[in-house]
Image (cartoon, rainbow, N blue to C red):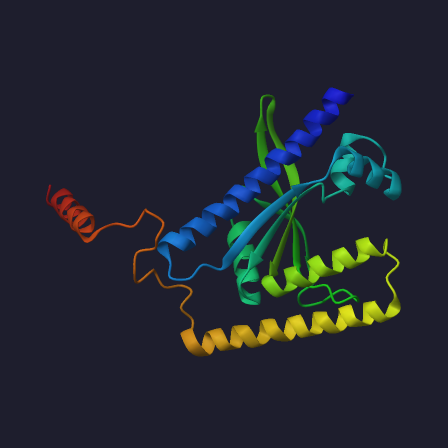
Length: 233
C-alpha cells in the first residue's frame, strides 16, 4: 500500500511539473519574443500525503485511488500570477488551448467573487503523465490571478491561520473591503495601461530582450539569404 500510494502521489507531482513547465515556456516566449509579458510569476505546491488523507476523511471519500482522483481535485496545484485581469483570462486560454490539456471544470471567482471577497480564476485540467506502464491522466488545479488578488489571498490566509479559522467579524468586514479596494486597483491599473500603451500585447518585441537568445542583425541577414537561396534552388 505504501508503494502504491507513493506512486499515486508521484503521478500528481509529475502532472504539476508538466503544467508548470508549460506555463514557464509561455512566460519565456513572451519575455524573449514579445514586447509584453503577461505572466509575472509561477508557483506550484503538492499536498502532503497526510493532508490528502485528512481531506479524504473530512469529505467522507471512499479511500480508493479512483475515488480520491475523482473527488479531490486540488492535490496538485499551480498558481499563475499575471499583471492584469485580462492577462489572467488570456493565459488561461493559451494553456487550456493546448491539445494535450483537457479542461475538467472552471470556477470564475473573478466575475463572481466568493462572499469573503476572494477573486481568482480556477481551472481543473487533466494532463497526461507518461509512466513506465503507460499514460495516466492527472488532474491539476490551476489558479490564475493578478498581483493584487494574490496579495489579498496571501493576507487572508495568514489571518485565518493566526485565528485558527475563527476570525473576528470586524476583521472579516475589513478583509471584504480590502478585496473591493484590490479589485478597483486592478481595474484602474488596466485602464491606465491601455491609455498609455494601447493594445500592444500582440506585437513582437521592438528591441532584443535581455534573455541571451536575441538574434543579431548579422544572423538575421544570414537567415534571409539562406531562405532566398533555398527558394532559388
